[in-house]
Amino acid sequence: MERLANVQGRTRADKVWRLYMQTDEQIRRRATNKIIIAVVWAFACMHFVSRVSAQTFYRVDTYTQPYQTDSGYYPGSIQIAYTGTIQFQCGYTSPPIPVFECWNAYPSGSNLTLTVSTRPGYDTDRFHSTGCDSVQSYCKWKFDQWSGDCSGTSATCVLTINGPKKVFAEFKILPVDPGPPTAVALTALNAGTSISFQPARLGTGTFIKYFAVCDGPDGKTVAMGMGDKSPIVINGLLNGVRYSCGVATNTSVGESDVMKSVFTVVPSSTSPNPPVPVTEFYNSSSDTYFMTAGTTEAVSVFRGSAGSEWRLTGATFNVGGNATTPVCRFYGSVSPGPNSHFYTADAGECAYLKQLQTMIPATEPRWNFEGLDFYTTVPTNGSCPGSMIPIYRAYNRGDVRGLPSNHRFGTSAAALEVIARGWRDEGIVMCAPTGN
Image (cartoon, rainbow, N blue to C red; front, side, top):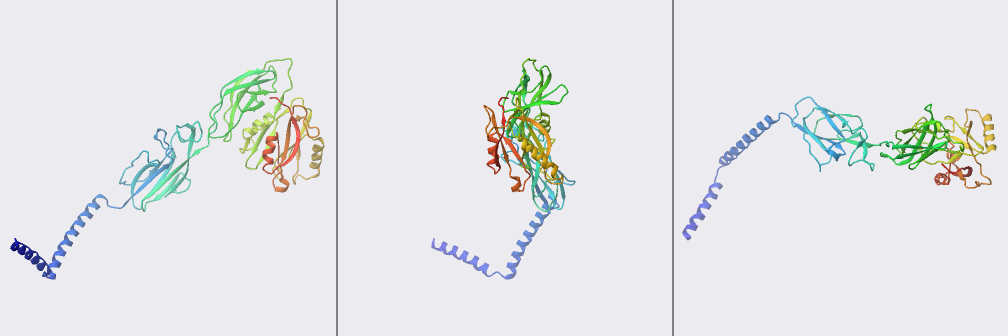
């Protein structure tokens, strides 16, 4: 055993000695052989790669946001216009990767034209099980903007391929108008009607009021009313005349179509003189209010004749009835202004403004008399008689704030809302009758 160990030790030592005694030429020959093998292998790999792809391709990922989870659809899609060889075809993935739509690989230096479009059916009011802003899940979508390696709001984007690209098409939910009430039914009253209905979807807006109108035999609107729920009573109609009446839903987004029905007002020998409601509108762009007791004018403003910015506030009070004091209505002008209306039941104040109109040139701001708008009851010593409702006037202090003068008329709640925003309380100026 000792002799065997000595032999093995000498053998390992001899190998080390022989390696040490190799000439430089032998070492170079061995290294050269290894390099040749590596070069041949690398050449073979390069030849294989060149056969797979003769040029550089870069991956382009396209996404749509957000991913609409109901039915597994996207609200839109991206089409890519490209003439040439595409290395990889389009491939889809499904949730939980929420917005990934498709990817392709394109040659370096190529130019792509990307076009985005809303999927059919998603650009109109549509019911979705999820993903909408309204409780009833009605919404519609619109392309908003590109992000990632494309930018802007145009429907197309030109992309030059010089590296990997990621492109996002972002969609947004558009406001949805409310739907009209359903099951509209009319009940004839003495000199009026009661309109009952079933509420409809509100869309994406905040509910304001239901808006009821009655058209006469000639098709012109002759009376209107508002309410928070069914039914809505409209007074001021003529007995024995056939009317077409209906109701619409009004929200912060807009108003629905009017759902109508036809009826004949019941004749009566004791027709009262019912009060009529004042309709108030608000323009958020100019922070101004406007009111009218004229049904035709209210419907016209409601339908956008004075601009799309005017919205119903839902605030109202009654005028007319047995009232005998006329209310003077004044208007400034678009230029030089003020672009606003003013009302007064004070005969002295009305006469004074008429006099100023004759003294101030039309090229300067002034109030211009338009006529008598409605009848009311004036307060006595700052108070309203009996069960009548006090109507306050608030002024926006335009003279000191550098704004067009504007007044708001309404109950205490309406007046306090603007007074809290810095408007001046001008007290009780009218008294409104109770009732519908």
